[in-house]
Length: 120
Image (cartoon, rainbow, N blue to C red; front, side, top):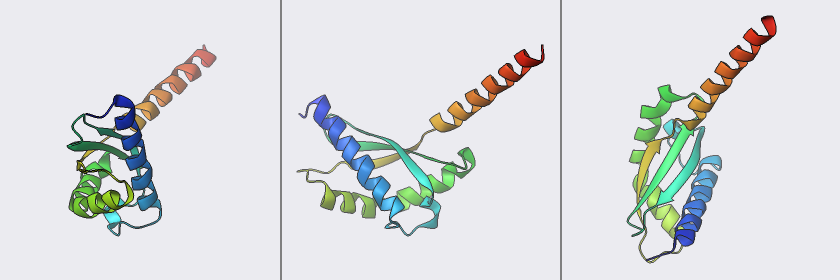
């Protein structure tokens, strides 16, 4: 069973490789254009890799992006297996990451509070 540090390194490498594939246009599905890979978490048995994604447009693109990634899962898994040497390569599961949207919402709320405090 791999150590937590090794699992973290594998996840980081997968995130890096997936990000490069998206930027270089290796994934030809237009539903996947303009997304960011925010995190990759590999489980202890190396059976699954949970991949978290987001897009600038936000939640309204979530279903479209996840469908595009699901349809490209086989291609992505094979491409990653060719680039990252592992005895057994984990299955890919994609999830929407709302963190960026939440952070933007919090920033807007804080800006409104600051604006209110200046007017008082």
